[in-house]
Length: 593
Image 1 (cartoon, rainbow, N blue to C red):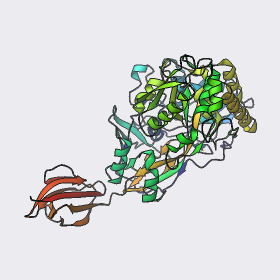
Image 2: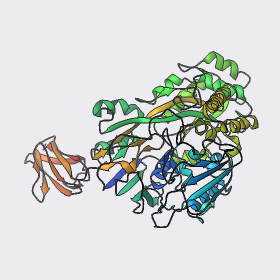
Image 3: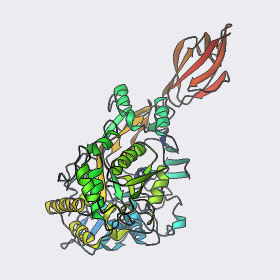
């Protein structure tokens, strides 16, 4: 039997909080929509966070050790390392009540392999010759070559079990899949909302505290912060430059503002499939020397992480600090020398998200590259639109600001998905550099067959040689923590190092909610109907959770009512506020002229 250990000295997958009470609706606001609900295609961080709570994988591979999930124990591996047998638990069910068996996991692998689907997960199964069920509770996978991390590869959310017959065609991939995890996707309104409900047939160790989880899309980071601070939402992001202020206001990991371990590499993908950088190693190296990583790093705000010039992020197995490019600022002299004679048209297209620090970082890169003679036009996209555009081979960018979080702590997961040229499709790609060189593909393949210290050394040298040679990406910094803001009613908090906030584990205080009212400007009162709440200055009262309270603003004889602010808005003196969380309301009055 293979021990359930990856050998990575990283923190456990989950952190923070306790099991807590069950019930209620968890409200999550975010900017982009999920890209897909089909697990074989869902590659955006938002989509994978949803898959995490709706999918039962073979193991939880996000931490330092493989923890059985749908699997009953560790896989057994043949002496030659080419046949893996995964034993499954009994009693696994979808939210429909249908059984989940070994054939469902085999089908998920076969489905990813189908070229009609164009799944970005094919990089994880290149070594698989066959995947078949041996009865109800045994999945047998045969390999073409050794893949010591196979159990982790097959435990990514791309391989959620699906009943045979699930659609393959690209036009059918938005059909809601059956849920095998603690929750299932009950509804999805594109670019508006996505609703998860608890899977009553789930029997497992993962927590499922909220009755339902509602994701609302389209909120700016500024608006997200406002919603969580006024308890209009429960889980929110915030502008990167506001992290320090939130830390000062709430403290860190004390209930409202959380900064949890998560290693994400931020980098510029260098499009080797387009004219400017095709067979142009010198210019790719020049860009690596030209960028000011220190200035870019500062755009990440508090808890930004560490600057890096390598593909494998610091802290991940296989990382070795090779000191390849300057981390303190631009090396303009070397950059100009390499760029001379390699600029071609001298024009480049730089694409970025229009959210967070994306526009600011892109502007720094544009300024840096202008100093070596490269004139870049910046195009900023909505995050979900950007992912769709750049996943299509032949997209018209030269440089792309993007990020990658390895789905498990192994150097294969850090390098291969974003640089294996043998797995480039017509669409749904994650190799945004479109780096496709048989020499390097051979080295990637060879490194993937090794294990232990030999494996780590092979990937470390591959990392070094790629960045010294073709330099298919421009590593900028590794975000080692992710900040999250929550409402006052989130009484416990858990976080996964790969998938982010563990929405299923969050618990909600639903016993009571506080209503605070204040009178500002001139004299007046705020009173509730029916009577019971009356305030001429500032006062508060607790109500049962979910109570709708109608407030009436009454000016004094010498005053006029102007408007509501806070939990109410508008100029109508009557306002109804529902207390599904603490609410603060201000009635603004002014003196009569």
